[in-house]
Length: 127
Ligand code: FES
Image 1: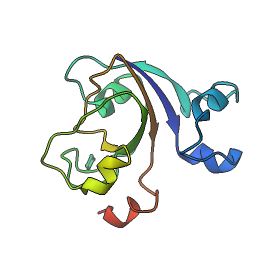
Image 2: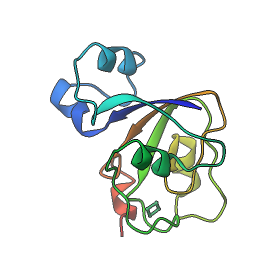
Image 3: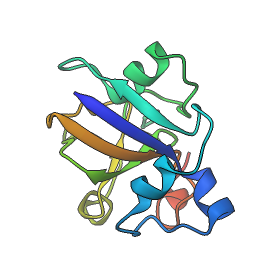
Protein backbone atom coordinates (compact mmCIF):
# COMPACT_ATOMS: atom_id res chain seq x y z
CA UNK A 1 0.00 0.00 0.00
CA UNK A 2 1.42 3.28 -1.12
CA UNK A 3 1.05 6.09 1.40
CA UNK A 4 1.60 9.78 0.92
CA UNK A 5 2.03 11.57 4.25
CA UNK A 6 2.04 15.15 5.41
CA UNK A 7 2.83 16.62 8.82
CA UNK A 8 -0.08 18.54 10.37
CA UNK A 9 2.41 20.99 11.88
CA UNK A 10 3.35 22.46 8.51
CA UNK A 11 -0.26 23.35 7.59
CA UNK A 12 -0.26 26.42 9.82
CA UNK A 13 3.08 27.64 8.49
CA UNK A 14 1.65 27.66 4.98
CA UNK A 15 -1.89 28.77 5.77
CA UNK A 16 -3.32 25.44 4.58
CA UNK A 17 -6.39 23.71 6.00
CA UNK A 18 -6.99 20.00 6.51
CA UNK A 19 -10.12 20.40 4.37
CA UNK A 20 -8.29 21.93 1.36
CA UNK A 21 -9.09 19.82 -1.70
CA UNK A 22 -5.64 20.37 -3.15
CA UNK A 23 -3.74 20.00 0.13
CA UNK A 24 -1.44 17.24 -1.13
CA UNK A 25 -0.83 18.97 -4.46
CA UNK A 26 0.25 22.07 -2.55
CA UNK A 27 2.44 19.99 -0.26
CA UNK A 28 4.07 18.26 -3.24
CA UNK A 29 5.04 21.63 -4.67
CA UNK A 30 6.30 23.18 -1.46
CA UNK A 31 9.79 21.61 -1.20
CA UNK A 32 9.02 20.23 2.24
CA UNK A 33 11.52 18.23 4.24
CA UNK A 34 11.13 14.45 3.95
CA UNK A 35 10.17 14.30 7.62
CA UNK A 36 7.15 16.45 6.84
CA UNK A 37 6.04 15.25 3.44
CA UNK A 38 6.80 12.14 1.41
CA UNK A 39 5.83 8.61 0.53
CA UNK A 40 6.19 5.21 2.12
CA UNK A 41 5.05 1.64 1.62
CA UNK A 42 2.99 -0.32 4.13
CA UNK A 43 2.81 -4.13 4.06
CA UNK A 44 -0.50 -5.95 4.44
CA UNK A 45 -1.50 -5.96 8.09
CA UNK A 46 1.40 -3.76 9.11
CA UNK A 47 0.30 -0.74 11.11
CA UNK A 48 0.88 2.65 9.55
CA UNK A 49 2.96 3.69 12.57
CA UNK A 50 5.25 0.65 12.23
CA UNK A 51 5.73 1.32 8.54
CA UNK A 52 6.61 4.95 9.19
CA UNK A 53 9.10 3.93 11.86
CA UNK A 54 10.57 1.31 9.56
CA UNK A 55 11.08 4.07 7.03
CA UNK A 56 13.04 6.08 9.61
CA UNK A 57 10.35 8.47 10.81
CA UNK A 58 9.65 9.45 14.39
CA UNK A 59 5.88 9.90 14.37
CA UNK A 60 4.22 10.59 17.72
CA UNK A 61 2.84 7.69 19.78
CA UNK A 62 2.53 6.65 23.42
CA UNK A 63 0.48 3.56 24.25
CA UNK A 64 0.65 1.68 20.91
CA UNK A 65 -2.65 0.06 21.80
CA UNK A 66 -5.48 2.41 20.79
CA UNK A 67 -5.86 3.89 24.26
CA UNK A 68 -4.52 7.42 23.78
CA UNK A 69 -4.61 9.63 20.69
CA UNK A 70 -0.96 10.55 20.38
CA UNK A 71 -0.62 8.62 17.14
CA UNK A 72 -3.74 10.09 15.47
CA UNK A 73 -3.73 10.74 11.74
CA UNK A 74 -6.36 12.16 9.39
CA UNK A 75 -7.13 10.10 6.28
CA UNK A 76 -7.62 12.47 3.36
CA UNK A 77 -7.91 9.84 0.63
CA UNK A 78 -8.14 6.05 0.64
CA UNK A 79 -9.33 3.51 3.17
CA UNK A 80 -7.83 2.65 6.52
CA UNK A 81 -10.33 0.96 8.85
CA UNK A 82 -9.61 0.75 12.52
CA UNK A 83 -10.23 -2.16 14.92
CA UNK A 84 -13.22 -1.72 17.22
CA UNK A 85 -11.29 -1.57 20.45
CA UNK A 86 -10.01 2.00 20.72
CA UNK A 87 -10.70 5.38 22.25
CA UNK A 88 -11.93 7.38 19.24
CA UNK A 89 -15.59 8.43 19.23
CA UNK A 90 -17.66 7.75 16.10
CA UNK A 91 -17.68 11.44 15.27
CA UNK A 92 -13.89 11.38 14.91
CA UNK A 93 -14.01 8.27 12.74
CA UNK A 94 -16.57 10.01 10.52
CA UNK A 95 -14.06 12.83 10.07
CA UNK A 96 -11.41 10.36 8.89
CA UNK A 97 -9.39 10.34 12.09
CA UNK A 98 -7.58 7.06 12.73
CA UNK A 99 -5.01 5.74 15.20
CA UNK A 100 -1.87 4.85 13.28
CA UNK A 101 -0.64 2.36 15.92
CA UNK A 102 -3.53 -0.04 15.31
CA UNK A 103 -4.62 0.80 11.75
CA UNK A 104 -3.45 -0.57 8.41
CA UNK A 105 -4.32 0.78 4.99
CA UNK A 106 -6.54 -1.46 2.84
CA UNK A 107 -6.61 0.68 -0.31
CA UNK A 108 -3.64 0.69 -2.67
CA UNK A 109 -3.27 4.43 -2.24
CA UNK A 110 -3.64 6.39 0.96
CA UNK A 111 -3.12 10.06 1.79
CA UNK A 112 -2.77 10.89 5.46
CA UNK A 113 -1.96 13.90 7.55
CA UNK A 114 -0.07 12.64 10.58
CA UNK A 115 0.53 14.38 13.89
CA UNK A 116 -3.08 15.55 14.27
CA UNK A 117 -3.12 15.01 18.02
CA UNK A 118 -3.54 18.75 18.57
CA UNK A 119 -6.48 18.99 16.21
CA UNK A 120 -9.49 20.38 18.11
CA UNK A 121 -11.62 17.43 19.23
CA UNK A 122 -8.67 15.06 19.19
CA UNK A 123 -6.57 17.00 21.68
CA UNK A 124 -9.29 16.60 24.35
CA UNK A 125 -8.78 12.82 24.19
CA UNK A 126 -5.00 12.98 24.64
CA UNK A 127 -3.79 11.05 27.65
FE1 FES B 1 -1.88 5.45 21.78
FE2 FES B 1 -1.88 4.89 19.18
S1 FES B 1 -0.19 5.32 20.44
S2 FES B 1 -3.57 5.12 20.47
